[in-house]
Length: 223
Image 1 (cartoon, rainbow, N blue to C red):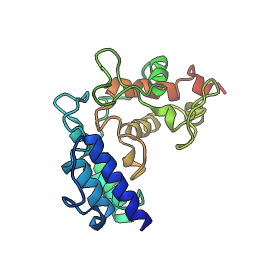
Image 2: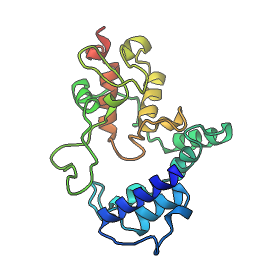
Image 3: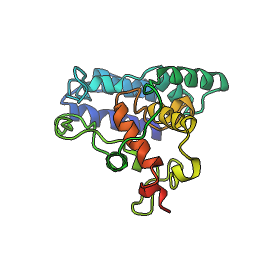
């Protein structure tokens, strides 16, 4: 009963915000599952501004609601895919990675630090982020801590002394590049964004972030 009341209240609130005036006579919310109710409020009751502008050229806010196959599997399994599902996710992620030609060369660690500590990027209209004025950040700080000069998140592992502990041999750099490009290649259903696969960071930006992790002069490796 309590769950039903919450769902009905949520439905009424969303409909009011959307400027619609459907009543219980129009739709019986109490007979809907939570998923059915959510889909109704978003897709049918106009509880979401589908045509809101986003930074990706030609895309709208509606595109942000459509899950790809990987997201569907991770959602349905609550980020705990079966071994078979995990293997498929990792294989598809590895196929998505586009490595730089030749040896991987680190970029500018100072630019990488700015990217790692920037959450600028993908808000919706009317307060969307203008990428012509400022490039999207990598948002790494939300999940990782890097060095003592700044406090980061703890959802992901600490990256302190990352390069100092691992070295800069090509296999190590290639592995790190692949994880940043599409972390599902190593960690199926991870919370880490698919920075390269989804076009969030360019090749040059990924190499800058890697420099922040590996360059001996980076504060990450100064402890």
